[in-house]
Amino acid sequence: MKETALSAVHIDLGAKMVPFAGYNMPVSYAGLKHEHEVVRTKVGVFDVSHMGEFFVKGEQAEALLQKVTSNDVSKLVPGKAQYCYLPNEKGGIVDDLLIYKISDQEFMLVVNASNIEKDWNWISSQNDVGAELVNESDEWSLLAIQGPKTAEAMQSLTSVDLAGIKFYTFQTAEFAGVKEVIISATGYTGSGGFEIYVKNKDIKQVWDKVFEAGADFGIEPIGLGARDTLRLEMGFCLYGNDIDETTSPFEAGLGWVTKFNKDFTNSEALKAEKEAGIKNKLVGFELKDKGVPRQGYPILNAAGDEIGRVTSGTMSPSLNKAIGMGYVPVELSTEGSEIFIGVRKKSLAAVVVKTPFYKG
Image 1 (cartoon, one colour):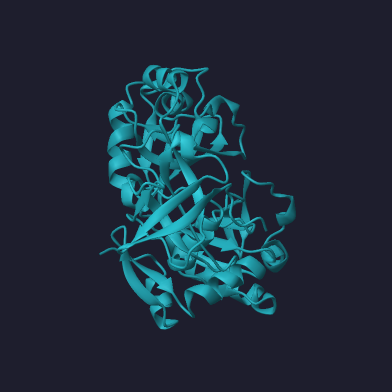
Image 2 (cartoon, helix red, strand yellow):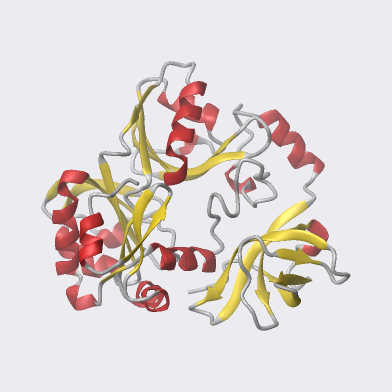
């Protein structure tokens, strides 16, 4: 099992460590509900250094990304980031990822930890245009500093105006005494904040200074358990749960990052699927009956027939309601539609609701 550069720090802090995507990761420190609340109201710090970082460079960098990703990379300018996915050749999704445009001839891709090797092999196999590809996943650490007080709490660590970094933009600057740190506003929690990309050798210094700077703002370390409940309250997809190699991007609600003004992997088939219309759709739902939906539980119609599966589910700490996501037939995907969740041998009533569940 791999360790992040901060694994020893988490163990010293008494974190509960679990294997996740091949890494030894902190799932919680003071308890999931408490940590969730810290991010919603104050400042929480996640070590998400298990994520992968690829650099695509050279004159053909943009051409390769236009070919392998769903979104229109030509719309990016240096300092902007973009969400997209890698389509496979069968109508599914290799991974979802972020693209950061560093300069006209350099991009950084941030991919899911469990897919680093798969994504690397996939993009490399598509690289017939001669772009330079570098996998630096093992060299970078990544902190997600999240919560409404983040900009104020971290401002003393940099000369960059943190409040001025808009959503899906980033700057490279000195931070916590370390030069060339990428400071990005591409959070996954719905409570604001920044992602800090720094080389492994400097991460302990950054971690210590972040906690010093945030001491008066109620800063705490946060585990991956709360990261999951926070993202689910926002209705954000998690690869391996809500999307995978077999998932239609249109059924998953990713049409907004699928741009047909260019040719890309499987674009003709995806275009035809869009025109034909989808049969199923990823929806959010709330339980009306008492219980908690979990990944893999069956979704039923009023007659008791299985019509889908729960892809993500939890008891929402912010809303104190049982919430989840899953795929249902389009005719049952409108807000207010009644569905049922099979929990053990019971059939619990639920209602389709608009996401995000948490409005902030």
